[in-house]
Structures are given as structure tokens and as C-alpha cells.
Image 1 (tube, rainbow, N blue to C red):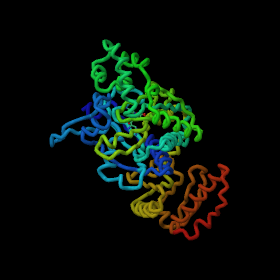
Image 2 (image 1 turned 30 degrees about the vertical axis):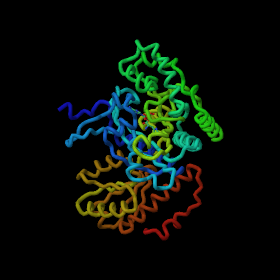
Image 3 (image 1 turned 90 degrees about the horizontal axis):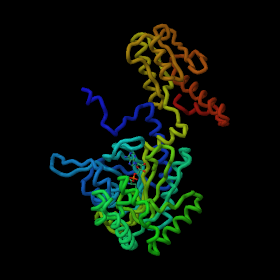
Image 4 (image 1 turned 120 degrees about the vertical axis):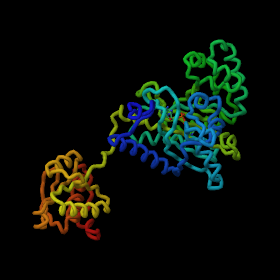
Length: 449
Ligand code: HAM
């Protein structure tokens, strides 16, 4: 019994008290990316295991140690996505998006699954907002993509993130770089972990982001990709930096960034915080000019990033940033008796069609208990309807904040409520110093009410 009432380690629920914050962050990200032409794509939560082995890379920690992989009932090897890029590229190819105008600008909100050791900011099920720009090799695109992440943080009011950028070169310059890495690690071979011994042969760059403390200590003094860039990669990286300066986006060149996934080429970047503990990378991304080809398409230079929603929220909470208020009940209709309940149901359905949040008693509580409940909901207005109100045709609409009550004809209740509610909103704006110049009657005229 205890087991079924406990969530799986490394997963978390988002309760109604928090979900509006997540929605705000996600909505902001979608809107900022939307202004740069990125359109939302939705992809499945699981894919063929081979997609990630080929895409993310079979010498990465993610593929070797962290994937949720299982055989389905048809004996196919299936993996819960550990990230979004491979799935987006698969979809780009499968759906022929390369026939659409290029670059294809795609963004997404996904849950991801990695079997990592859970800690603050590190979960086994986590969420990302990400975007991918496919079909451009220009450094302008690198700067645009980095700029979008930067804008999202700015729109949310997040402060103090450090943008670190690096270039890890292309297959041409990587030959020399791999050679230098092999020579360096060969001398420390006896100290490397078992997985890194294998990486030394197959992909020495992966030793650079091994999580074992001994390997990462050795990796600190390893040769840096930046010192091995070919002319083209060097020019590209210089140009990205010129764009970033032109856009007034502060950055630091950090030669030790290699990223934990195999597909990256040229520019890589991270937005890092020192305020949320060891898992401080809130956003990571870069160019992956060879991935589309690796998965079976034509050569298509591309790049993107993903930001961890949980880490971002952790940081926003830490910085005490404001979120829009949770939606509150606009009107609570307390009722006495069945006839009044029918009337409440009728009023509620009319106003709900107008987009107003209305609640009435669906439990059968006393009026006193109903009013207590309305208070807990934070209802902006309340009204009580009983036999005498039905008879007289008059009810009292109460503004819960000011305590002001106004008599209203039941016949025109919906219209009267809309006027009262609108005038309250306009007053609220004026109190904030926002002169609306709107006169209530002009809004109501031509309106249903
Ligand atoms: P990534 O660096 O593996 O990159 O993940 C991106 C972000 O997801 C991280 O910076 C972090 O905020 C969040 N994240 C990663 N693992 C966890 C975890 N276990 N718990 C909580 N948050 C986590 C990618 O996934 C690439 N697909 C990004 C990309 C898109 N590159 C190009 N396009």
C-alpha cells in the first residue's frame, strides 16, 4: 500500500499552487521564441532506442548509463526520451519538413527521462523548453538562438546568469584534437574509470565530461578544443562573438565547456547560475551540423538549446521573482434550496460562456459554510439566492474586497455583474496609475449585456 501512494524517486508532482508558475514560464518562453518565428512541435515521449544511440551518441553518459530503455510487447527496444533534439530531428526528416521554407524554426515543451542520482535541480523526470533551428550554417543564427534564451531570462526577470560559450570545432579540426587528447589521457590511463578507458579508444572527448571525480580532475588540464580550431571554425566563432557584442549580450569564453551529448559541433553554450547548488546549468545548447546526416538526412547545419524548467523555477523562487496571480473565482453564488440552485446553475453557465470563473454550491452545504468556502476561494464577488430573493427578484451583489453591497435585479443579474466586475478592473488599473480613458458604458454598449 505504501508503495502505491509514493511517487517514483526523482519525479515530482506540480500542484495547483505551483502549476500557474510553470504555465507562466512556459508561455513566456513560447511567446519570446514565437516572436523570432519559432513554432511549436510536439513529439512522442518514446522513440526507438537506436535514435538516441545514434543521435545523442553511444559513448555518452546519457546513453551508457541514464536511459530508461525497455522492450515493448513486440520485443522492440524503446527508450523514454532523455532530451528533445533527437526526436525533433527524427520528426523533421520523417515529415519532410526540409521541404518547407528553411531554416525550420521549431520549439517544444517536453518531459525528459534520465536515470541520474536525484538531488536539488536534478530529477529523473524533468521538463525542458527547447528550440531547434534547422538549415542554417550562419553565425547569425547562433547569436539569434543564444539571444532568445537570454531574452526569455530577461522577460522573466532572472538575474545573474552567466553565459559561457565555447567552440568544439568540426570533424576536420577534431582529428588533431582527438589525437592530442589521446596522448594526454594515455599518460594517465591507469587512473581513468572503466568507461573512460573505452572512451579513450572510441571518443576521447567524452572523458572531459565524465562525472567520476578522478576523471574530471584529470580532465581539468587536458588540451582544449579552442586551441585546435581550423580556420573556418575560428572565423565562425569570432563572428558569433561579434554578433553577441552587437546585441549587447555579455558572455565569457569558457574553453572547458564540451557538453554531454555527442552531436555538437562548433559553438556550444551554457547559462549557469551559482544560486541553485551544484546543478547550476539552467540552459545548454549549441550547433550540431552533422546530426541530421547522422540520422539519415541530407547535410543540414542546425543548432538549438534546451532550458530545464525545474531549475529555472528553482532560481526564480530563490530570487523571489513575481509570478502572475493564480486565477481566482470571480463570482460565488451561494444558494438556499433547489430552485435557487437551478437559478445559480443558469447564471453560472451564461457567465462561464463569457469566460468568467463562477462557482456555486455543488455539495449541499449551509449558506454559512458556502460563504466560508467562497472566502477560501478568494471570490471577488458573492451573491446569496434563496426563496425570498427569487420571490422579490432582487439580490445583493457583494464586493468581497470593499465589503460594498449593491441591490441588483435578478432578471439583469449577468449584466449587472459584468458591469460591476469591469468597473472594479478599471479601478484597479487606475490605482496602478494606468489611465485607461475607457468609459464603462462604451464597453457595455454593443456587448451582449
Ligand atoms: P542538456 O544540457 O542535456 O541538453 O539539457 C538541457 C537542460 O536540461 C540543462 O541545462 C538542465 O537545465 C536541464 N536538465 C538536464 N538534465 C536534468 C535533470 N536530470 N534534472 C533536471 N533538469 C535537467 C539537451 O538536452 C540538449 N537537447 C539541448 C539542445 C537542444 N542542444 C541543441 N538543441
